[in-house]
Length: 126
Image 1: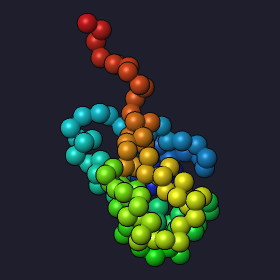
Image 2: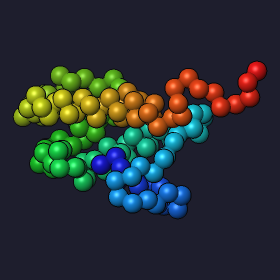
Image 3: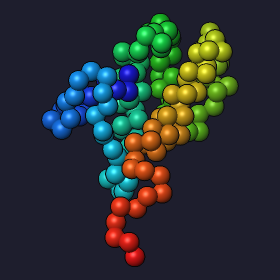
Image 4: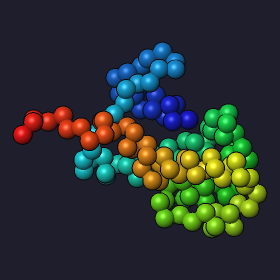
């Protein structure tokens, strides 16, 4: 699901249309501009995930309470107990998948992975 959205973003800019299966080399640049658009990006990624989930996440299509799912995977302060009250039919495997998605979106791991290399400053060496 992530690569589908990123491909839409990349091909919309005309920067990196590549063969299927290849990564478009998209990188995020840290700063105020990224901080301003990041909440909207995570919400869009979550909405796209629910609209067209991958094969492994196909169970998302039949789940009631999609608003609660979006809230859980995009809000770092979300409580798993509240989600389980809203959607009690979640299996342990489904909970684990939601926790993985939450780590990527709400807790900033996707942002971290798409930034340039960890602790590397590409500016002038002072």
